[in-house]
Length: 395
Image (cartoon, rainbow, N blue to C red; front, side, top):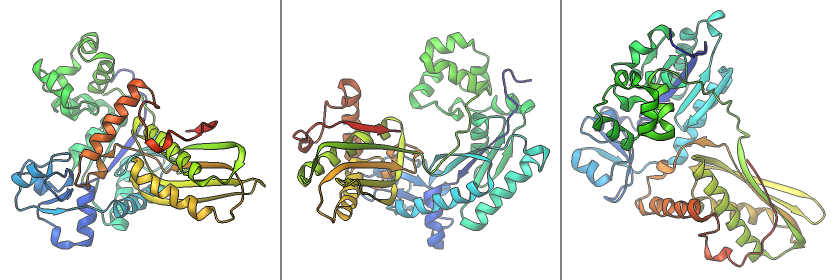
């Protein structure tokens, strides 16, 4: 028997080659041919690709120049995040309607805790019927893994692809994991993989039999987590997803004001701070809300759904547009607020449709400076003259 495993049943669902699958729904000529989604210029980056393109060595995050060289006959599509977000929300709505507890882990994957389902319906049967409904109503291919925890279920999904199902029951977890490459373990990146391979560790079984203290000495504080995953141990819970999950900031003025240039600078400052927090927590938002409270305490809000992002330069125009639409009464303002909601886990790789990867590199450089020297170490010049006000920040 597996040590320290709770008696749980976790389902992991992952939409197969999500961006490509959506494009194929709208253009059947793309079916069966190599397709790459990403930036159109040679300086762009691959955001997603079909299995036909993968056979040539193309993969996500690869420079487009290299992808075109590996697969010159591939059809390259810039991508449409608004469309992808819409299909993602469609799948989430189906899961929300059917599931007891679910977690939206990213734009194209979900975890569902269906512990106890066997007593009433049958976990595998329930999972199969949910998958069939998603395929039928969305038209998208989707795979699932069903097992004792999030780690094993996610690995099982990877083995079930493309467009398949795989259940790994508790007594067979080690039998399932042992022959797989260590690269299959969630959390093992390129650097960790190369380090372990340099030590002669290629398969999960080898890592599983290593003393945990040794793994921790080699890999640091993350070593014990990786060792447990190699042993099929993962006690992390499915975090109930809520569309109310959000991060927000409000500023109350000491004196009511109609100084719009100053307010615009403050909006920039708030967007800058909140988007940095999103990136730090590896979150993306798809809904922006702006709140204005007037001197007479009348409060008005507007919100707008957007493609998933965590970039200042994408969020700021939305915030300013909402504020301009709200501020029509020309009364003194007492409070302004911004909220980013509909959060999902993810890094800004889904904005790789931009032809300039330097944008992503610039944000990464600024965030490194803020993490080292503080959030005020680097900022937009226009915020320097903004008056400091007390802010209430909520996550």
